[in-house]
Length: 235
Figure (cartoon, rainbow, N blue to C red):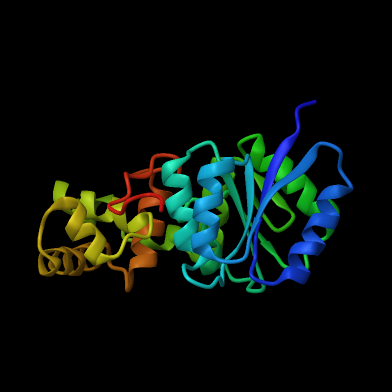
């Protein structure tokens, strides 16, 4: 059985030690690196390229969601498990669209964490104790965030988005800001804002999160097909 290499990212040494202790109980897991802030995590990911990263969200220098996006954009084989004190469906969604494969509370049981590490390494997704395929994850998001309600008007009243609006929504789905989208698509910030206003109106939703859930739940984009980041991925 091959060993799964793990990197731990958390700004609290005591919590990092606890994660090391849990991982040490399984011969198939090995901690190869640790980081206490976002910038260091990016640097160590480049050096060690671990199989799985245990990622805190609230980090100094660069937050865990931004770090997750930059690492998974640069290294598609690295899987990220976000570990946080917040247990909220929208936070789960933001973590997943940033590139994470799992979302666990900080009080997760050791055996569940170890199982989640193995499951995401195998290509599955996990939220707490629930392990899901991609399709199962989409159903979970539909149920928790009400994505199906967005389609209640029926196909006959749905107004398709323009190609440019779809391109912008694709980037929104992966957490890019308006400024990043403008830079990536080489259009003005105001143009992106205008398109976003039109997208929200056409889809009948109130915010970017709902628009992104709509795109995912209808198969317009997939979590495994994120666009190239407009930022330099590492460093």
